[in-house]
Length: 287
Image 1 (cartoon, rainbow, N blue to C red):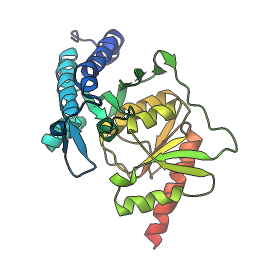
Image 2 (image 1 turned 90 degrees about the vertical axis):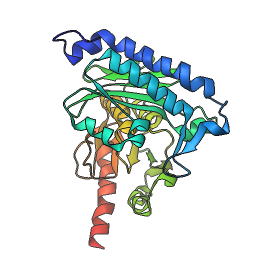
Image 3 (image 1 turned 180 degrees about the vertical axis):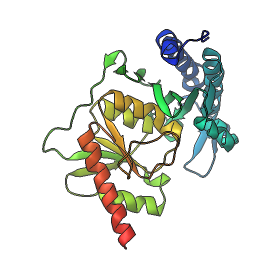
Image 4 (image 1 turned 135 degrees about the vertical axis):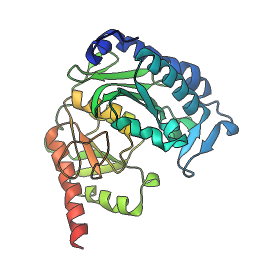
């Protein structure tokens, strides 16, 4: 519980391990017992056949909502499943209170199909500033953490993304075709060019981790729901990377971004990918 007059930085220094325990606890209690064990009645759809939700998503989010709110009294939780039930709860991101942004199972489709490429994402935000994040891939037992100004770490080892190897083509994970409109597909076509190798993304959280590790050069995403991006963007930043929208400004977790946007392992790569996407946007305007 936060103490009187304690700052968020002091809270994080004192209680980050408790957040980690909550994230691991949610996975142990609600996610992993259902991994490769889901019954048909435990899987449903939200907006369509590619937008899946499971009992693991709902159970893990409830677990985290209770645990995180208790750790930091006065904070609020914005979780993917709660927003699906009541879209007005998303507005808390714009408020003054500290906000926990939660994606209980990022990569639900992979989870449903028995693939280990899913993770739990938690980020702490206040006044639109990303302060800390936790990315936990329970089937791989990997935990990545970041604190603003304190670096990014994977299982305790410092992450440095570093620039791509000179002369090598860029590998860019893009919004999956199943989740994009025709207009968004056309915008992302700018990346199908010499020196760039686009591929469809899996779990957004794990793609961000790959960027932070220097295993992936960049992402290019066409949606800006906070739970998919908050944890990973801070991880990439603290590993030395950068992110840009089509206006050349960093991505804002509070919204209003001009999309698509990119997150990359260094600033030069971010500018290159954003430039390609911006060029496609200008051509569409002229047409």
